[in-house]
Picture 1 (cartoon, helix red, strand yellow):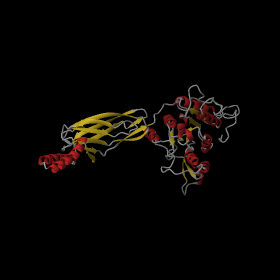
Picture 2 (cartoon, helix red, strand yellow; picture 1 turned 180 degrees about the horizontal axis):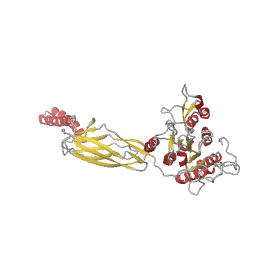
Picture 3 (tube, rainbow, N blue to C red; picture 1 turned 90 degrees about the vertical axis):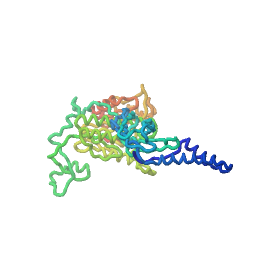
Picture 4 (cartoon, rainbow, N blue to C red; picture 1 turned 120 degrees about the vertical axis):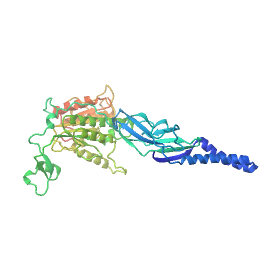
Length: 467
């Protein structure tokens, strides 16, 4: 069955433990041997129950099946417990009722409790219960604890299994239309997915390599020598950045902040799926992961969703917090952003960030002139129906564009998001606000349209954002 988790007295057993010695004492004081014998009998009865509780022979063998083991946020899964009779002890005689409790994370549901009968050897039974995927993340289901009672109802023995199963709740994926790159018409990004005859794969320079194969432009960008490997062209790629440390929008541990962060994670998962569907190799960049691309196909999708399932607000912080000097947290956040700088073969860059310090974050990505398409979704904590939810297509920050939070008819954070979108569009990004009242598909299409239109030249770019 598993390891013993503990033995304890029932209310009846606890009463007997107090009454038995007391009766013995009173009988001895008054000289009544029968009373002493009665007290001794009560004590012996309790000792028999305790001995029975120490019997190590298992009564049940338990197998747990979680299916499916990966569910989207808001979905449900089923847990099946297969119980097999494997012998009996004083507490496990066939037919005796046992209380079973399968431990489930409290964020998902209370522990599953049910009553089963101890099974004779060779017999089997099954129990099912549902677990809702209400909280994204990696959750452990188990161990199973089974509690039996001795024949006199004095002692409870609890044993637990060692087996623990994992339930992974991944972000929900919203189907998004493929983004159109500037000048691509209705062809989307499909043309970018196939390598052209000029496409090359780069690798680090090794002693003995022909200097004529050095890719000088890429070497200057990376700060180290890289060479062409022309015999192995590969599919074009895309970068999707979850900027989990983007200011106050994604950081606070409150209901509004967490809801905004979940919106950001859903947007990243959906964007990655849309780009992968178009044949691009998607590289996901988060605060707690490296920059190696995920494998292609179904494995790549599973790897992206598994990484996003573990994403948490403020996850860039060190696991052992310490006081940060002024500006250190900001530098750490920009370091995450810099990991998303596109490589030579990455043609699409998608950034999901908050409304704070957007100019610095776009500047950390450089001019990013290599990607044919650059999109940014700015997540806002607040917003309300009937208020300004986006800037007009082609609008940019500059004279004549009201983006001041004191004059815009929106909440402070939403006003900052609108201003950030205007500045990003002026710098040539396709940008849109993703507030609590905004549909993700609609926001994605707004960013696509702004990106297809190219940078606005009617008004100057916002200060601090590289055009």
